[in-house]
Length: 206
Image: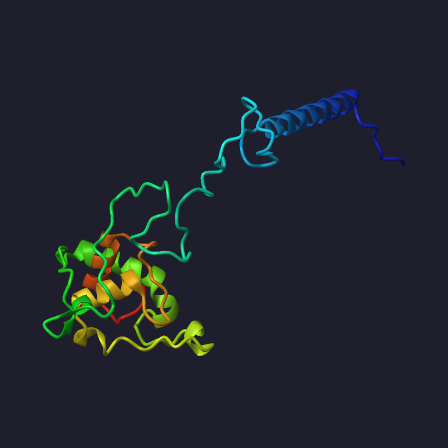
């Protein structure tokens, strides 16, 4: 006995209509992509809008600015760039005040060590610092195991001043990269509050 059934005309017609609609949608998407006024397929020598060439890119990433981990300073901004939040007074690594390093004395912490600040500082620490120094500050991380000289810091934290920790995050060190571009002032002070709190060194996330 033959149980095979021929597909009905309605099913065949529905399949044809679906294919036509899919083809039309693909054509519309292709046309829309081809007309997008951005850097994809864009020739700066032959701009599409008014025939004139302009000295900027349309993707808003390639502009006068310092990218994360890009070489530069916190004081000398690229020409024609506009800082949104101003800049901090730069402290030279060797600057002394009364025989002590200025980076160990200034700036003073303006943020109270509230539970919210400590909780947020823990998040910042785990985001940027724990990769090398570890969640508990013991530097038992794959990065350190593969040769990065990231020292254990759990025992050092009580000996270091709040300005020292803040400036270390801001300026980095001989081998540690600076995180002044990735973090805000508030980020760094919250992180200092966490590192100086009893919660530091316990590891894990709250």
